Image 1: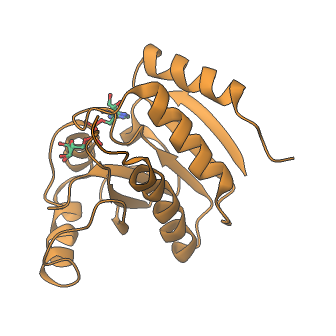
Image 2: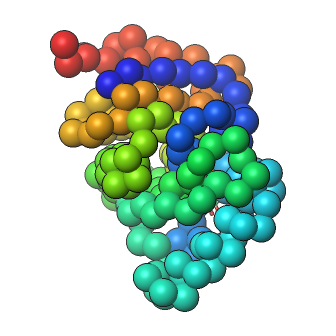
Length: 174
Ligand code: AR6
């Protein structure tokens, strides 16, 4: 699998699926979630509401993922996942890794090959970018998946620089 890094806005990505850093309500929010719902239009929220009424009455649990169509976005699907809020008291890195693994699993179920990820949990949920980058790259590169490209879409030069550095240091499978 190719791991690529781009600096930009995830809502502009022409990929099979974009991953949304959602919250368990699936009812939208700020950051990536706000941008996806704003650009993607009401069809996404409508599907999220249906998921809430059926499979996820208690909300989508942290670390899990579920797909909807992508409305007006250039992507075909949105894969919604819920990152953990960062904690200094408790190690929640396994839950953050799970977001990436479960999103790739959903991508495999959809039969798609190019998936764009934001840096999950590094905004409102407070995760330090360098630690989040290491966890994200570790989870994606270790995943057994048919996805051919995992594209990290970093929002601004500082995030892009941190991911570039982490990817350079990363031991890659040959
Ligand atoms: N494209 C790519 N990355 C972006 C974009 C964008 N358009 N907008 C922000 N980022 P966040 P979280 C970056 O807060 O930390 C929402 O309210 C941002 O700079 O979107 O997982 C949800 O509803 C940061 O590096 O997600 C939840 O309640 C990264 O994306 C909560 O926020 C993630 O920031 C989730 O918090």
